[in-house]
Amino acid sequence: MAASPTDIELDIPAPEFSLPGVDGKTYSFADIAGPKGTVVVFICNHCPYVLAIVDRLVKDARALMSEGIGFAAICSNDAAAYPDDSFPNMQDFAKRHALPFPYLHDESQQVARAYGAVCTPDFFGYGADGKLKYRGRLDEGRRDPPPPGARRELLVAMRQIAATNEIPDDQTPSIGCSIKWKPSATA
Image (cartoon, rainbow, N blue to C red; front, top):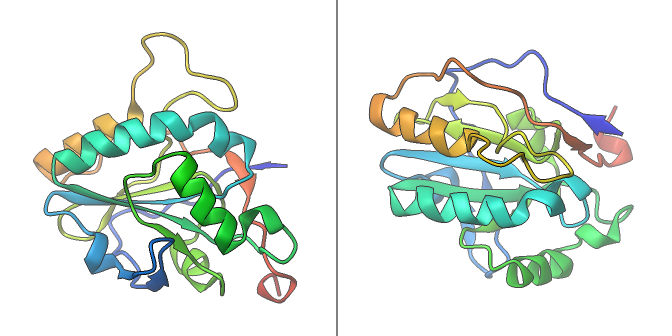
């Protein structure tokens, strides 16, 4: 079932974390933060919404990273119930899609809870001050490609944030598969 963030609160600091990456390193927010801003996106390996955007996500991430914006993806799904989202499968996913950014495993789901992540994909764009400025979508494509000439919403918003550190007016929440919570995490 599709989910989308509601009650979005902006201009709050990024929650800290320490998570293992598929590359064998451990990352914190400070490790991934860029001098001009940072994007944290919650994804998973099997979600049709993520699979539909992954090539565009990689393209836009490369562009933003080359402009001084840090980038990381986090998988918080319950891998016991959804084995496609296991850590070894995350490693395969990262290689298959040539992810240019750290892909992190939130096995405890505490980071997803701290961020208020709801769905995959769920984008969090932070300014250089480490405060949330963007909680929108990649673009208007969902499970199908966006129409020709569609605005690259995350890219445009993060460039504005990098230049002004202001919250962009035009933000449409992402939509995707709900985070697959562990039974103990939903209580």
